[in-house]
Amino acid sequence: MRLLPLLFGLFGGLSSVSAQCPDYSDYSMARHEPFSTGKHHLSYQRPIAACRTVNISDVEKTIQDMKAVVKDPDLFRLFENTFPNTLDTTVKWKGYAEDDSTEELTFITTGDIVAMWLRDSANQLRSYKSLLKANKSPNSLASLYRGAINLQARYVIRNPYCNAFQAPAESGLPPESNGFADTDKVTPPYNTSFVFECKYELDSISAFLQLSHDYYSKTKDSAFFGKYRWVEAVETILNVTEGLLVGTYADDGSVNVSPYTFQRQSTSATETLANTGAGNPVKGGTGLVRSAFRPSDDSTIYQLFIPANMQFSSYLGRSAKIMKAHNPELAKRMRKLAFSVRRGIEKHGKVRHEVLGEIYAYEIDGFGSRNLMDDANVPSLLSAPILDYLDASDATYQRTRKFVLSTWNPYYMHGPVLNGTGGPHVGPGRAWPMSIITSLLTSDNDAEIVKGLHELVSSTDGLGLIHESVDTFNASVWSREWFSWANGLFGEMLLGLRDRKPHLLETSFQ
Ligand SMILES: *[C@@H]1O[C@H](CO)[C@@H](O)[C@H](O)[C@H]1NC(C)=O
Ligand SMILES: *[C@@H]1O[C@H](CO)[C@@H](O)[C@H](O)[C@H]1NC(C)=O
Ligand SMILES: *[C@@H]1O[C@H](CO)[C@@H](O)[C@H](O)[C@H]1NC(C)=O
Ligand SMILES: *[C@@H]1O[C@H](CO)[C@@H](O)[C@H](O)[C@H]1NC(C)=O
Ligand SMILES: *[C@@H]1O[C@H](CO)[C@@H](O)[C@H](O)[C@H]1NC(C)=O
Image (cartoon, rainbow, N blue to C red; front, side):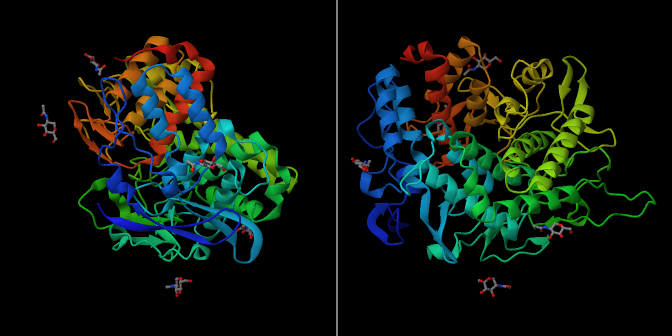
């Protein structure tokens, strides 16, 4: 096992702690005692207290509370390992901005990669949203949220088309090198001291709005949003997304210059874009915002990607309420765009499936082509209710859900180990536990939820963590040992069941 010195800022100051702690990539690949007492003998996967990156007492208390209500020892072990995983392992640095000693900053990595994804970090924190409350203390969930919003605002203002970023200079952490990106040709250009990867994904900037809404909705801390660069970041997002409403061709037939292009040398078609980096042609005038990549970091086939447009419309509209106190004109612009994107989704994003009737398409191009599929990564079609875009009882959503969780979906995988959606990122044959978790978050059906919990608890290969993908025929074949977003999502889902379906936590999976 590799031993690395772990460096991170202590709350309330910039002093750093160094301890001999195992690299969690190695730690999470091995089984550690005490094993859970159920038939799956799941490993204990929390690092020792001195090696955890953050300690929040409300989270510790929640784990203790859940111990009393989750009857199955394997299910509880999976919760105990996964729920705190972001705090235990990925808050690599927390401190203050160099030019303003009151501006909190939180650098949160995805897990196995030392870089901060806008999407992952927003969702990693979302797993603690139910425990979030107003709190000025630097040793609080509220402070972690504020720090992440400030750092994301900095990232968005500097590189609004990018998806993954380096640690801030204040942290003293060196930039991580990204071998995959060495050959990337990207416009607008960026500096690898700040950016880890620059795949333009509408869901990345939507994640910033989601994170902002999450913090505001639980704390009502309006003043915070006027203090630093939040307003400027939102204006940047409006400028960028309004520029991405245009189609490939102008009315006179000339080709509009794409505001963003990306080319990578790769043997994988989903790692680069057609048409010299601009992507496949898109028709203008639909009201939908283009996205070059998906939340899986795979390229879109058709750039009018419906799930990210749902997420964008939802949180742009909700964040307009925050903006109103700081810049009423911008708030109006936000509401207007949120509305026109929603209109575009409802007008162009709903299509006829030959057997199931009207459903939402995954992607369209505006010319009439549509891609009917779903991918496990959120935002997905399956996740529309948790994006606060619609209610799970919506009839079109219910038909779409049926489609997604059926063999009509080209990326639905089934087998004896688990059944769920996957995607081209890892490929056919691999279902992603994240999709099962999403199906439980959006289900009111006890039998479906119990079946999903059973699949999740029995498919960790004894390691007691949520992996990225699992072979539907062999639980020992999986990807990504340390995927904090998926771990957090599992914790969030189980905690949600305590409130909405506590009787299910009495189920035994032995
Ligand atoms: C977290 O901090 C509390 C007090 O602040 C302490 O009692 C507890 O032992 C700590 N837990 C861990 C896991 O470090
Ligand atoms: C990238 O940023 C670093 C750090 O600020 C700077 O030293 C370097 O000159 C920049 N590189 C380019 C190509 O601008
Ligand atoms: C947004 O675009 C307007 C018009 O081009 C420009 O004046 C403004 O500075 C831009 N705002 C940001 C934050 O980039
Ligand atoms: C997956 O679905 C198939 C039917 O399509 C079923 O036979 C199988 O038992 C399911 N697998 C699990 C793990 O539930
Ligand atoms: C499952 O995968 C593991 C790891 O690759 C392999 O050792 C094992 O033989 C496989 N089991 C079956 C039944 O194929």
